[in-house]
Length: 487
Length: 100
Image (cartoon, rainbow over all chains, first blue to last red; front, top):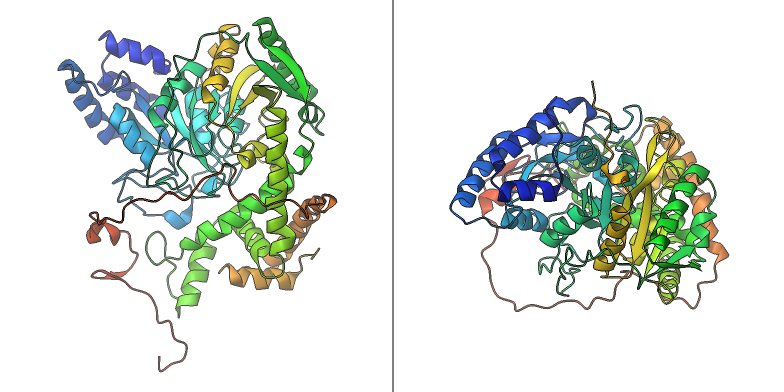
């Protein structure tokens, strides 16, 4: 099989040294993506367009006009970020046939830096899931164990990076959908502060929680890619105007000025695998050896995070997904008598079971008579959770937790009971509710599968978060492990 | 707290413009009942004096000058329409009744 691709930094350096061309890299990426087809990481490849862009890149670089050091590096995007002239389906039947008339903010930024999108990655339909099993393209597989899920909903992106068909990919994270699959696949995944990366052209799931971020094999690569995609976009009214710092310059390896908070509630949560906790505790000790101080902190409302999240996320989703009506784009049901039936039939045929379940719950909590009891109540508890983090961050710079309570689960293991699946997001959803940044990085193995360490930072302190994660990776080699080659 | 019944599923499904078979509605009623029982734990908290959070970070509504910019070309805007007539989306009749 064609070799896995190197890291972003390695490819950047190889291109700079003229040791390889972008055309060679893109061909290698495409070939490897095709070789791993049975893993269902991709839902569409841009073979011809990507190779043409690579040829243009090589010409630019030869004439000394490279757009950035990453000009010509292949990358993948999740199937919920639009690219002009390309399909976007959110792994849903309802967006069948949709071709985007415009570029998303992140695709513009990738193009401005010369990165080449080789394809769109698999996901849970409309990003609703933690396993990439709810996809019309079929379940994605974890490269570490093909019988297990790669996590979700950005399971295609995490899987592709772990498999090595791309050095990095973009995912989106509404309740953990970058961090949890990163943990499951043994790669690094960063959810930036809400508003740090433009949501323009990201298909909306829960608008107050959605955020795009990078997945890569190293923290440094995440920093390189965040540098490309972060920044203000006036087309996204929740985009933050603050200047973007130099993220790679922040990676000094020094954490002696930092205090890492250990939230008791995260380590005592019900149902967490002791093997996972052992890896995370050992990683925290490693950070102490690197000079960081640690202290216990408390997030007393953490146990209410999942209930709060599922009320707010489904309410926002029911509103956002009202636009799929079969009129302006996407799938339209046939043989209908009137407009009402057109809506009902189109949506019933077009959405999968999990999406319908969430639309139903969200419609209910927003419906007359229940709004205050559920939706407003959840918004109030969101305030309490937000304050918990504010209080905790008074005495620490970083909070360390497991990313997920267990390693990647087996395909089909949790598909019968939606609540069981939701509970696997216990460590990640609170971060979206608080709007703060979080990163997951490999910190060991349990039962032969990768374990993720989650680090959380104060709003807009991605640089501190990345510095801490990078300091850990300078002292560990978990991120250099690669899954066995698929026969 | 309300509990989900078969009839409640039908009522909400209609609001959401979704249709379900009897078997599906039955199963959904059970699942949603289960979920509502779980989220009822929020009632343990006294939130009477707590402001709701709509967005995690304080954001003022950004304003910009109201200047015309080139719109999406009509051919692109209508290019994805499942059924169209020129620059109009074609839909079945909206008014009930045979005479229309």
